[in-house]
Length: 501
Ligand SMILES: [Zn+2]
Image 1 (cartoon, rainbow, N blue to C red):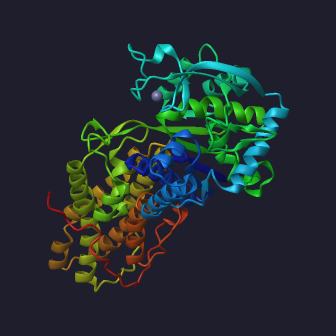
Image 2 (tube, rainbow, N blue to C red):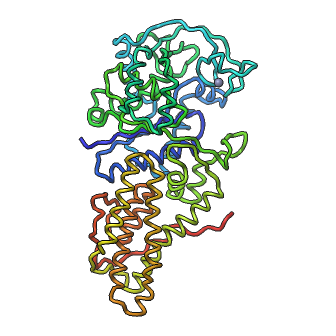
Image 3 (cartoon, rainbow, N blue to C red):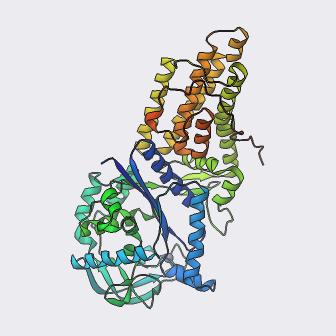
């Protein structure tokens, strides 16, 4: 069946969303919109991860009930989804009953399959990491390098998941691209990391150290650790194996995550699916981190980029464009106000905005705003078929940045075509070809509007509606038919030029 299931990681709600969350959402959204545009039945999931010690302690610190705390933070993430115009079909929270019920079923299944066992574990535990840490990973004075705190010696009973049992199978699936990890460098890195085999992992914590989580079935002194609690969201949201959505959409076609959680997705998650006898995801696409003016973002540095402020100031489409076209899709990238303004002015105001404005103005001036009755010139149609095929090829490979670059080549082509054809000279000379050129340009706008809809849905729709098209044309409708005789309706200026601030 022609279906696509696309997921983001679920955001941990111990704080407010930052631009990295925006990046992941926008990437996944562009892929989901592209998938629908190409005619695939698409399901797109995002959500929030709401259990764990860190969240529990943060809520205590702030003196609020932990339930109230997660509600408040989850609302901020939902709001980010909204302001970025994300087209998700569902938003799952791990504190929801529908999730917890199915997670317990999943636990029982793993148990019945003999893949969970109880054992005592003694080791150094870092509260910040919410994990046992190895001595070799600590600094010289015995501190966790991430949290600059001394881990504590802890001995406790845990349930363990037999990940080691699936190690060879996981390595094989990834090596052979059955689970395709992009970029290739991250795939290699993971395979090297697991070369000596994956170890069994702790799947529970005693309730006294992890009071905020899903209780282990039939053992109320234990609470599930993040793996079984959070990774399972991708299948509980579909209703797990009895769900209609599950039957229709699983396995995931593209799971979009940050590089810091690849080993959990490529290792533990695949292992759990194998144990459950379920299909594995077809692709895991791993984006990088965003620096701010070349520096790692941090609260103490005061250089954290707040996506809400940028959306408020420049509109969601401009932010989406920057994240998709300026940040490498599968690598680290930089976000700075200076560069943002440059991209905004050069590509959005002077590029896309200018092209739309020029074409519609000329049509108004030379043909009373009416789309002429012409057949689009073959060479122009061919050129745009080429462009579109290239964009499709790149999006299918999940190179969203390169895809956006080709869409921008279409814009450049349009602006240059106007410069070359000089319709104003044709008008003066009463050249009979003028309407042909204007019609060709409407065809150019239609194609650009259609393709842009995937990346900047608001702008794409405005362009299409201005020339009499449906706001959500599909790829197969981007043919040569124009709305001949339609009187174009000039939209407001798409991207007002900004002075550098
Ligand atoms: Zn730590």
